[in-house]
Length: 110
Image (cartoon, rainbow, N blue to C red; front, side):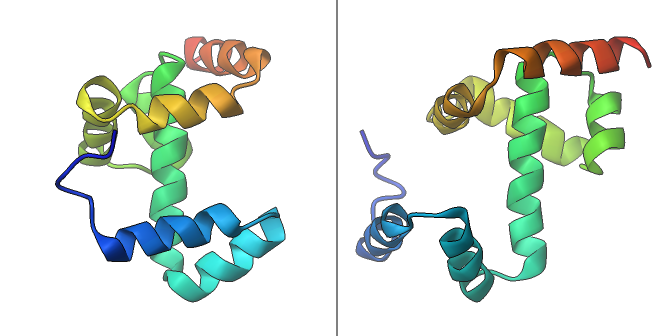
């Protein structure tokens, strides 16, 4: 189900284009043209923050590892708990079981 506040023909076209990308190289080429470097880095940072939050890492550890501000970490946490489950969907698809254990161990050693 698509949230009505986001549904838009321009976004439909963008998402259709993204779904046509077939390789990581194609993603790099398309997104380099589409976004600024800071925009891309911010998106990557948010995904990593979400991954670390799902692994129960502390805000301090997340901030140290990613450079994310407390506001960004909080915003991602809110999306994880009250959002459209997009982070959860992709994190489930990306997760390697030992990743979670490695993050928890690194967090515990701080």
